[in-house]
Image 1 (cartoon, rainbow, N blue to C red):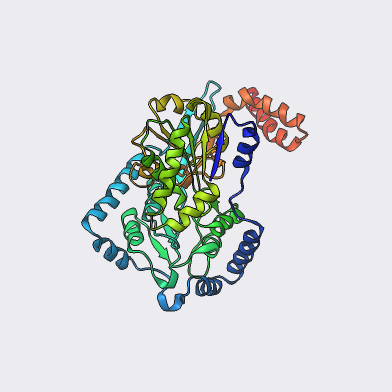
Image 2 (image 1 turned 90 degrees about the horizontal axis):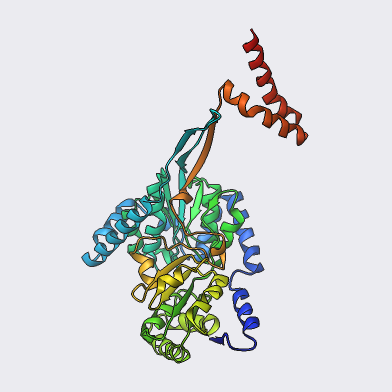
Length: 436
């Protein structure tokens, strides 16, 4: 775990190294994914069967390519009432938040008489990837499927790896609640390729969303253009800005909530109280020992954790912006004053009673967020990721006469005579008609 202070003589150098630390896929992953994608593109279902047998240790012909909807309903009905209620509450809140994101069409006529506007339509088919390795993520099913449904997607396909043929019933229950149409027992880069290209059994989709490991992320990167994607997501991240009036155990738990995801996850604390930073470090060590995820969490914290002491909390904000974290917590007396200065973050959790984990499940905003400093230019998953905008315009003769000569002048200046003629002929024709 790294300890830094802005008063250190080498702070600028050390912090820059932290910002630029690479925790994502290497060249070997890219090479392997390229081969997997090519196999699925060329061999279709046969490649999927081979890769599933190799990586997930079961034969799709025996376990079944799809998981039937009767199994989804059985999984939902088999949940403990409290857990089912929690899933349904999460679904309700996620839907309510995302409904407000749905854009409106526009249709206006300007002063030149030109009718112009935009019409929004949902994509026809979307694929969502749900991990099935380290843990089951029913929350990710809801966060990916519900915005698609709100957008109006007609066909919603889910792919998830089922190691040894087993699938977590929580994932199936969440799929039923969220309105998924198909679930296929495939995972990894091969599943992304199947959704992008289609196979004999699986029809292709227009957009793929959802989290995954380095191979899944790399497959999405390589296939962007063949299919739309939400983002290329890397390891999870959390930055906490906290003063010394917090409970160290609370802040330690917040840092570990991301560290337990993966050994490459990153957890960083900024504080203006060095003693508080030490107390949090002690609390982290104590809590890790109590976690069932201790091995992964310890590796993550030791390799990628950091505690940074600043002169005051405002000094931390420009440093936070350089990190552009996936998740940012502001735990202090006046968090809004800090939030007003934040420019780059995937999602911000404001105040001492707003742990990042509440956003992972039931708050409403999407938990699929940009990582790896991509919050500088990207946003979290939304309804807009499942929609596209078509612009339109309509001119009559008077409107063309008003703006057409400028178009002719610009086309001629660019050396595109056919462009110019396309407009000029209409302008000349209008003048002839007026003369007659």
